[in-house]
Length: 113
Image (cartoon, rainbow, N blue to C red; front, side, top):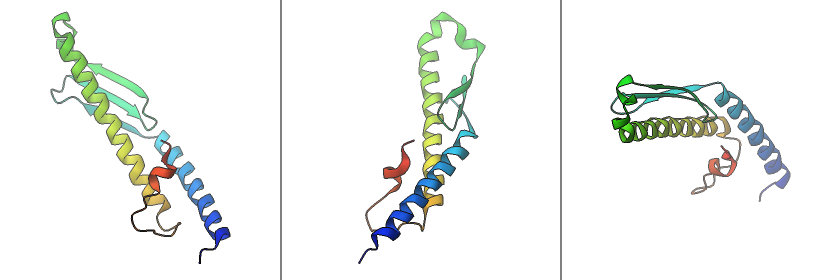
């Protein structure tokens, strides 16, 4: 039988761990570049773009489509890495707090990232 008070206390522990992970993520940066190495981006752990480098060869108006495609690719790569890092940190920090229920992944329930 489940002890509801114990579970509620564990949920509070999970919420505290989530706050820790979010604080940690705010201080990290992710650097990614497009596959053609013409666009480089830096995102912080909150998925905010904090730096952007565009190779001079793309500044020609004829390369507008390549510029847009490369920017989207680099930004999306960085965002995916932030998401993966957040999920890894969250799982690492809440592991063992709540009981394991097969087939139930609680990280998505608490992520809110």
